[in-house]
Structures are given as C-alpha cells and as structure tokens.
Length: 101
Image 1 (cartoon, helix red, strand yellow):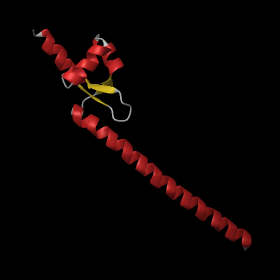
Image 2 (cartoon, rainbow, N blue to C red; image 1 turned 180 degrees about the horizontal axis):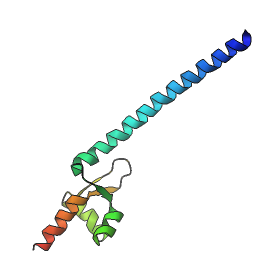
Image 3 (cartoon, one colour; image 1 turned 90 degrees about the horizontal axis):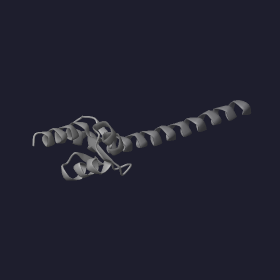
Image 4 (tube, rainbow, N blue to C red; image 1 turned 60 degrees about the horizontal axis):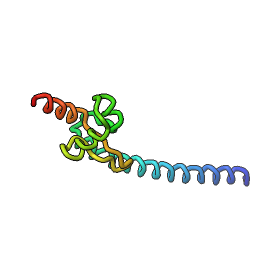
C-alpha cells in the first residue's frame, strides 16, 4: 500500500510540474506574439528583412537601408533584437521612386 501511495504522490507531483510548465510556456508564447504584431502591422502583412539581407538583395549599402528605414518610414526597429527590419515592399517603392527622377 505504501508503494502505491508513493507512486500516486509521484504522479501528482509530475502533473503539478507539467501544469506549471504549460503556464510558463503559454506566457512565453504570448510575449513572443506581442513582439510580432507591431512588425506585422507595420508591414501590412508583407515580408520584413534585416538590414544586411535587404542590402544584399537590393544591391544597396547597409547604411542606405538604415537611412531609408529611419527617414522614409521603410522600416522599424525590432523591439526584441534592437535591429532594424525593413519592409520589402517599401524598399521596392523607394527604389522605384528614385528611378523616376
């Protein structure tokens, strides 16, 4: 009987620990989703790139991409990483507006 009670106690402890982990993981997921929304809203659901990737893709310097992000509202600083993310569509539009001149 003691062995059975010990097994029951063990399972109950494991369930409590598992429930605590689920609560912790849900909180982490909610926090991650909070940080995603501003980027998605900013881009209107369009793709966002880090500065290095955008510079390589569009053949521009990283400084130019950062300047456009700040000055022409082509990007936003990611609240989690502190790095600039730029909207592919807004960078394309900026490039096209320069070609029209």
